[in-house]
Amino acid sequence: MSDDIDIKLKRWLLLLTNVIGSRAAGSQQDKQALLVMKNHFEKLGLETTIENFIFWAYVPRTWSLSVDNETIPCLPCVCSKSTDVSPVRGSVVDVGYGSLDELTDVKGKVILARIGRVHESFKAEAAVKKGAIGMLLFSEDDPDGIYTGRVTYPIGPLPSVCISKNDGLLISSLSKRRSAKAEITIGADTKRSVGRNLIAKLPGQATLTDESIMVTAHRDSRRFSPGANDNGSGCAVMMEMARLMVDKQRKRSIVFFSTDAEEYGCQGSSRFVQRHYPYLTRSCVGALNFDSVGQGKPHLVGRDREGALSSVLNKYCEIAGKKMGETIGHRDHPGGSDCDSFARTGINASWIRCWPSSSFNTTTDSFEKLDYDVMSRICKLGELILDRLASSSGKI
Ligand SMILES: [Zn+2]
Image 1 (cartoon, rainbow, N blue to C red):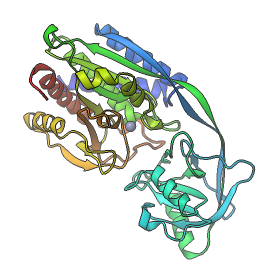
Image 2: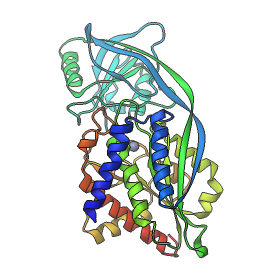
Image 3: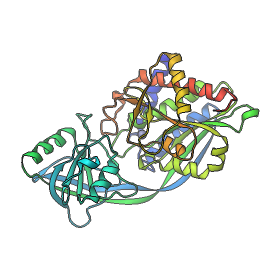
Image 4: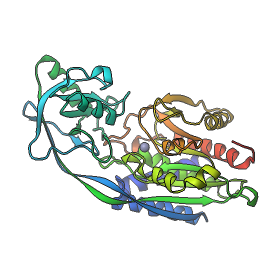
């Protein structure tokens, strides 16, 4: 059975990342992925609905970086401020992870920061308050690719580009030996776009038909990333879970929710929660999020911001893990995901994610880097959790 799941997951991932490719919210590729998922759910006999919403997509036109007149390959951070008429020029200062106490002496300078500990949008916001004029960002985890960062939606506070790990370390050592001068150019537009949430419902029995468990996985990826782990993995797992669960009717309904524009700060899920607030607070007993489940070991994500995720729901996940002989770790994470939109309104929400993830949100987040065995186990784990949640009629 597990091999069978493995092969199916591989097929979904090949289709999403290699045939369709990077799926930036609102793009043609995002729409293609939507139709693939919609077809799959409908073939399983589930009723589907598409809910549109408007958001601002970030469309970069030109970008460049030079350090001491040497051109360095770079990518603009999603939502980066443009440099308008003239480039931003300044000395580079290495600020480590860019946490508050590391942002000393940044006035008039371009900060060089590693990703992690603090989300890049907070690094940029704090740095600009202290007078920084630009940001270079890199990931220490991926030796091959370039991280695709995202600053505050819809437009961040300062021009920000991402570079490779090697270039990041090189510029760091240059800046420590002598003054290294960076020049950043970014030209980009914000475009009014249509996001598409896809909802597929597996109805429960008549007695508890109004109560539901939501399963969320975002469909969109960052513009320059193939988006295999983030979040082709979650999409494939969600489609497989639906297939595994469709033949049995449980007390509660299970709602499979493919969100859009998560990479712009959970735009799709927060619009959905806003729109269905009365229904959700009355009837949604839990929301289980699958984001980046294709590399590393299963974890439940904690929060040092945004408020805690659900300890009740986490317990269900742990019990299911035990039953499978699967150890589930706990980890805080500075980044957000769709579970936050539910948790913010008081709905039980949890996030299953795998760590470590070397190519998370980078240009090398590709099909062949994923671990299809761990994804198969996540499918079985999700099935167990959802089955228990949907089969019981007790309070959760
Ligand atoms: Zn994600």
